[in-house]
Amino acid sequence: MNSNNQAVLILIKPDGLKKSLTGNILTRLSETKLEIVAAKMVRVSKGLAEEHYKHLKEQKFFPELVSYIRGEMHDRKKVMALVYHGKDAIKKCRDLAGATNPEEAEATSIRGSYGRITTSGLYENVIHVSSNEEEAKREIQLWFNPDEIIVDMFPVKDVIEKEKKVKGWA
Ligand code: UDP
Ligand code: MG
Image (tube, rainbow, N blue to C red; front, top):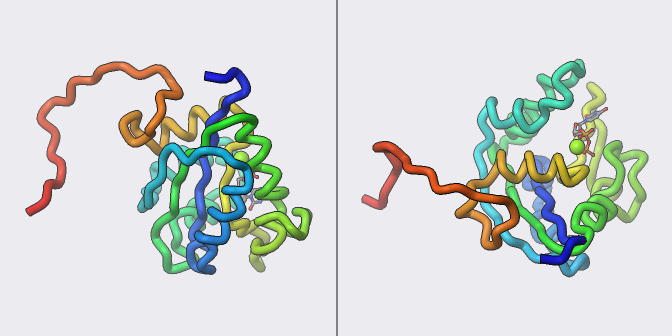
């Protein structure tokens, strides 16, 4: 594996889904020539949301942020989660996404084009992109199991699952 190769977690947030931006965002991201190595729709539990944004726990907008990523403001209780992989993946995707504050983001970036600030001040910025390698690893391991990712990017171990109830086709 090339040493510049990185993995990055992308989330199309509920506002992005509601605004029908999925195709548009995936097209923009395809300009990077990175490889999609995992993708799924996720219903975001409170626990997952709080863990994902734990670095912002002390912020006064934290409860609203958790509610936002869970889709409670957009009547879309899901996000699309993807892992992109390849050379300088984090910088490439963050450049396309634009600045966190959609009003400061470059006008042609994804957030600059489609984000907004709510009346209460929360940045609804359409897309999440991991900010560095350490965060990317933490976030990818939080959102995905190893067998949901088509390349081996982090060390894995064999785990014996004790009788676990799972859904099968009826
Ligand atoms: N956020 C916000 N106000 C802020 C900072 C962050 O509403 O002052 C929200 C915004 O949706 C952002 C998310 O919290 O995308 C995570 O913040 P972070 O600082 O990690 O920014 P990002 O990595 O998403 O650019
Ligand atoms: Mg971040």
